[in-house]
Length: 225
Image 1 (cartoon, one colour):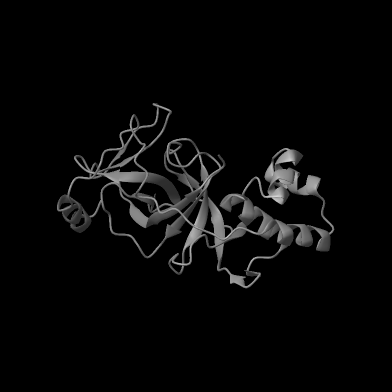
Image 2: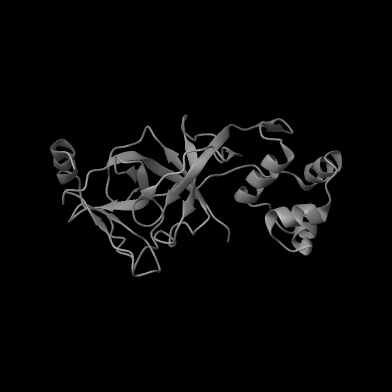
C-alpha cells in the first residue's frame, strides 16, 4: 500500500466493527427507492409483448400464484424483480411519466479472495434512486464472503468517484493485476474485512505488502429475499 494512503488511513477515526461474527449493522449501505410498475401497466405490457403470467413467473423464479398476487395488488414488485422485468420487456426509461436512468451491470465482483474481474457489460437496471451519482455501475456479487450484507448473486452499485476510505463503509477494490474483491474497510489494523456466515473467510490486512486501489464505494445493494 502506498505510504501516502497509509498515512491518510491512520488519521481516520475507528468505525464499527464487522468482524464476520457480527455484521448486522448495514446502515452504511444506501438503500434504493424505485417506483414500482403498476399491476395494470404490467398486464398491458405483457399483452403487448405476447407474454403470459407463467412466463413472468419463470423469469422471476417464483410460483405463478406470486404473479397473481402482484396483479391483485397483494404482493409488491421488488426492485430487483422490476429491473429484470424492465430488461426482459425492454422498457427501461419511462413508464407512466416516470423517467429512470439505466445503470450498466458490467460484470461480477468476488466476495471472497482476490480474483479476476469480469468487465463485459452483461445487463442494465433502472436507477433505484434519483440521487444515484453519475457514472455509477452495477456488479453481481460472486461468493459468500459478504453474505451478511449481500448474498451470492445479489447486485451492488458502485460509485467510482467515491474512493476515500472511511472505516465501516463498503468498497470494491482491485489489486492492480485485474483482480477485484468486495469488502468492508476497518481499522486497527487497517484491513478489508469479510462479513460472512462462512468463518473460513479471512481479512485482508493492508500494509503487509499488499498493493491495492479503490475501484469505488458500494452505495446500494439488492438481493433476493
